[in-house]
Image (cartoon, rainbow over all chains, first blue to last red; front, side, top):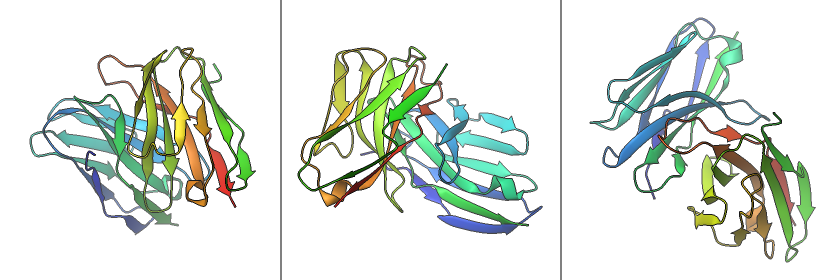
Length: 112
Length: 114
């Protein structure tokens, strides 16, 4: 089983704070990394799919970076808003299996 | 496009009963999968399929069967329900190929086994 670790498990920030989370994964056999945003009582929705070492992606106030050599990715949220409150999941696709393996997520709560 | 649909949304079963969770997608995605979500454990892969007629086991396949007779449908069968199978089940699909395709999730089925 692929070991995908996310930290922290949960985070409480104030509106306007910037924050970041980490996803760690085995660097061997890496194929792609996915970030998903998961709101309570909804389905996970894709934020980014990243494949290349050094990739940086941005969507509004959210951005992500990827380091495949050392096996980590960071997700950044600039100027957090209450609507950013959700669980953020990362998932890895390895070369061997064609299935995504998910980390347990980082739960973010943004206080107004 | 309806995307990924799942039925039912909620189900209560008694221990030992069997049932099928339905999943369908209309995006012509080759890859489909089933996950279960339990508190503190994220999403765990039950079974997946890379195309019609091809299925494979994920991390937690015991107690579940799948089949993929068409590209569109990927039902999950619980053979003899147990309380440990109480969970929220998500079906997902995506294109295969380069690996850079995002995955789309269904709305989930909340299953309680008493």
